[in-house]
Image 1 (cartoon, rainbow, N blue to C red):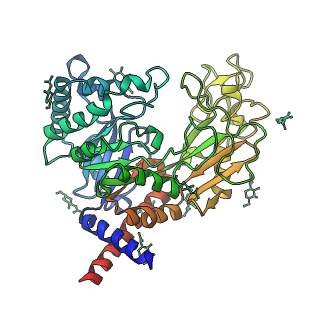
Image 2 (image 1 turned 90 degrees about the vertical axis):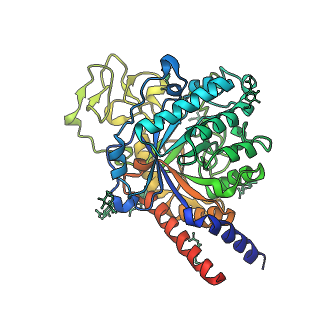
Image 3 (image 1 turned 180 degrees about the vertical axis):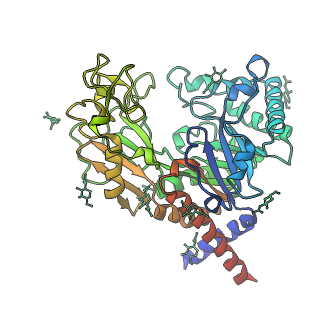
Amino acid sequence: MVQISTLFSGLAAASTASAAFRNVIYFDQYHTAVLPNNSLTNGVTHVITAFANSSYFVGGSTMGDYTPFLPLDEVRALFSNGTKVCMAIGGWGDLDGFRAGALSNASRSAYASNVASTLTRLGYDCIDVDWEYPGGNGYDYKQVPNSDLTAELNTYPLLLGAIKAAIGSSKELSIAVPGLERDMIAFTADTVPSINAAVDFVNVMTYDLMNRRDTATKHHTDVNGSLATVEAYIANGMDPAKMNLGLAFYAKYFTLAANTTCTDGPIGCPIALAEDAEGQDTGASGAQTFEQSSLPVEVSSASLVATTDGTCGAANSFTCTGASFGGCCSQYGYCGATSVYCDTGCQSAYGTCSTTATKSVAESFADALTNGTEDVLRGGQWWVDDEAGLFWTWDTASIIARKFTDIIEAKGLGGIMAWSLAEDSYNWSHLEAMQEGVANLAANMTTALKRRQ
Ligand SMILES: *[C@@H]1O[C@H](CO)[C@@H](O)[C@H](O)[C@H]1NC(C)=O
Ligand SMILES: *[C@@H]1O[C@H](CO)[C@@H](O)[C@H](O)[C@H]1NC(C)=O
Ligand SMILES: *[C@@H]1O[C@H](CO)[C@@H](O)[C@H](O)[C@H]1NC(C)=O
Ligand SMILES: *[C@@H]1O[C@H](CO)[C@@H](O)[C@H](O)[C@H]1NC(C)=O
Ligand SMILES: *[C@@H]1O[C@H](CO)[C@@H](O)[C@H](O)[C@H]1NC(C)=O
Ligand SMILES: *[C@@H]1O[C@H](CO)[C@@H](O)[C@H](O)[C@H]1NC(C)=O
Ligand SMILES: *[C@@H]1O[C@H](CO)[C@@H](O)[C@H](O)[C@H]1NC(C)=O
Ligand SMILES: *[C@@H]1O[C@H](CO)[C@@H](O)[C@H](O)[C@H]1NC(C)=O
Ligand SMILES: *[C@@H]1O[C@H](CO)[C@@H](O)[C@H](O)[C@H]1NC(C)=O
């Protein structure tokens, strides 16, 4: 009965942390229109507002006065009394402030002290450092080679230590860390122990496990892939009780390579080039949130108006048809005539599209949600749209439930985390699954403790 001892050690490990199981959600500034009521957010322990620019804290002329995108009393009102409100700094594409702040003893103490004074000034309870990523593989990896950043393997833990010392024990320090092993450059067996010692908890970004730098399909946030990420951190010395497993409240899509049908399942189908030689997005892939606005809207042709400024789409009902800007309306709402406008994502309701793009991303997404299937072996939902030539990968409520047992419980993790709150506003099914998982886990812990008394 191997399972019994495995289960018991999992429960034992988790139960030591169960008193303070973390239920963490990011709240990003781009999704604030539709917000959940308090019954859906009840029990959330930390909400992390995202993002403050990392350059604010370097000091000098770039310091400025960071203003949260929503006053913190309004953020607090969305949650239970006692929910901690944390400030995330950085995020994808924001590296300058971290690089400057980490450089030397002097810059690290200035940075840490500016972080601490900003938390106090604004009334935040905690700070989340989203450096994507120390050591390299960031958005500019083609311009700044990883070999130029090796010093960050030492300076990143030192910066974290300086921040923790400056904010003190009454405020928590967390970090967001990469999901893919290829990006864990600064998270080795040598560095993880000092990172682990500096932080209160770790938000593991177990999503985007397939991204635009890949060449073949796989799930972006499946059970198996998420488990592999967590195991890699544990192997390098991260304390499981400090880790929060990351959930994605969005789906991802990738354009399949020409003539690919993907009949053998979700893994390994070749995709079209999604990132160019300069590291730029080619437009062949993207993310679709679980919001009403991600799904198709009925467009009556009578309501369309010829574009006056080259923009198009649902926001202004402008059509590109007959426009001097080009006749295709891109997924981002601009008229043009090249493949960026006319192929993947082209909105046929607001112009013409190339014959290979007969369907919008929103239409394809709606079909994916209806027709998707679960890869039970790996724990990932997926679908191939042959008509649009797209591969879709996302999480369902039942897969989220599996993550609680197969990863959090099995590995004794100390929390769950999701990116991000209002990206699930279509019907809140992912947020509800997360809340149910936390409740089930708590109930199991109580049962396990009773049995052992
Ligand atoms: C909160 O929102 C959910 C989902 O929209 C809804 O089912 C529920 O009735 C709401 N609860 C309250 C107290 O308004
Ligand atoms: C939350 O705290 C406020 C102010 O302290 C109080 O008025 C309110 O009743 C509390 N709400 C709950 C649900 O405990
Ligand atoms: C952050 O601020 C710096 C300095 O003002 C600016 O150059 C940079 O573009 C900003 N980064 C982001 C991601 O907004
Ligand atoms: C930087 O700080 C470390 C540890 O706090 C110390 O050992 C080192 O001497 C300092 N270096 C300089 C140049 O001040
Ligand atoms: C699960 O993940 C592991 C580690 O990445 C991998 O070796 C294994 O093949 C995966 N299992 C399946 C069924 O894909
Ligand atoms: C791939 O598909 C295109 C049409 O999209 C067709 O012209 C071409 O012959 C196909 N190539 C192969 C190798 O099947
Ligand atoms: C999706 O499934 C429905 C039936 O549930 C079917 O009518 C429809 O054709 C399917 N759509 C696609 C694009 O496969
Ligand atoms: C909620 O939306 C998801 C898609 O995000 C869908 O799969 C699910 O069936 C919906 N649930 C309900 C109760 O409508
Ligand atoms: C809790 O216990 C139930 C019943 O034993 C089990 O099915 C489930 O996987 C356990 N874990 C969670 C997180 O619900």
